[in-house]
Image (cartoon, rainbow, N blue to C red; front, side, top):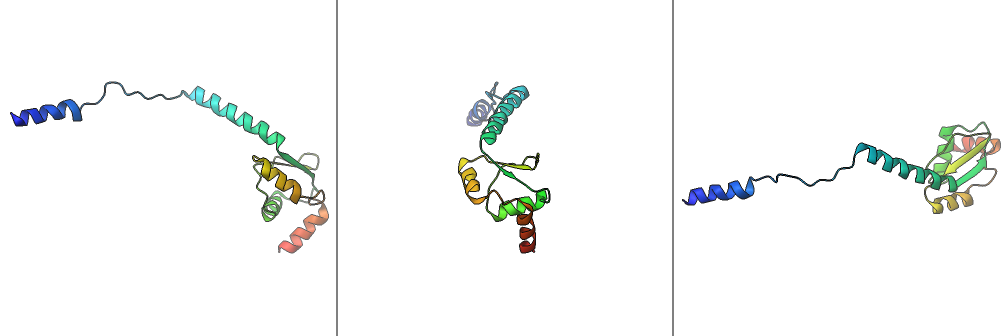
Length: 121
């Protein structure tokens, strides 16, 4: 009798799985739409938080990244250089202001590049 009541208890309470599990999952379309909206907002924010400087054609991307790291500039993106214009994009306005203060108009000319390469090695 006691054994039957214990078995009945476990059958009813412990091993009983709920018939419907309430879990709300977003569809792939909804997730994609949400991320696209989020990324577009971030892209717009980055367009407003951009530092633009003239750059000499001698600068290579690897040296450019090393130079920015040396200056302790935390950027989010380095889009392609277009018409000798370097655009450095930021997610944080404080990082943008710091870059504005640290980078002069002549930091990316040919003389600066050769000085950087000579002093780096």
